[in-house]
Length: 199
Image (cartoon, rainbow, N blue to C red; front, side, top):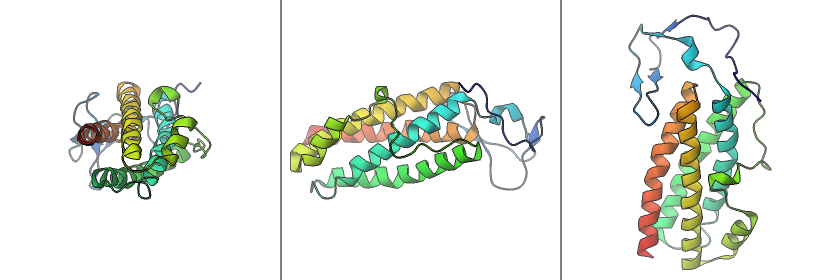
């Protein structure tokens, strides 16, 4: 079990100063807003070291996102419902780049990126093989209802994963990713429930 993963060996042990380049976002408390670091501000290096929670988050969220993309990819040929179509496009727009960021981050740590046969734990709302086969066979309103039910559960699982990262993670990039997942997918859950009620 990984307890702590250190950064690059060339990084200094002490605090590092924020330079004139791209802005640096300093994560806040779990669930709270971040802030932009001030030029010249000293940032403790220990706050940016990856720990096991960061690795678990990335390694679990990549296959979780892949399943969401698979589900969203079924929408175009199975329903004419505009709200469901817009939602599926939004999922693809946000989650594809997030997979790339998390994969690159894992690679920089020397960790293998989960392959396409990997699965996130079922406790995080993953659809079963039977769920996916039923969804593939559905059309029209039946598809819409099943898609929304499965995706709400899926998003709620992602929100739980993000909450765990915000509670135990230390890496700046993974914490920012978790904040995006927590807020963005929370908004999408609300929207999906509204669509479902209107069906």
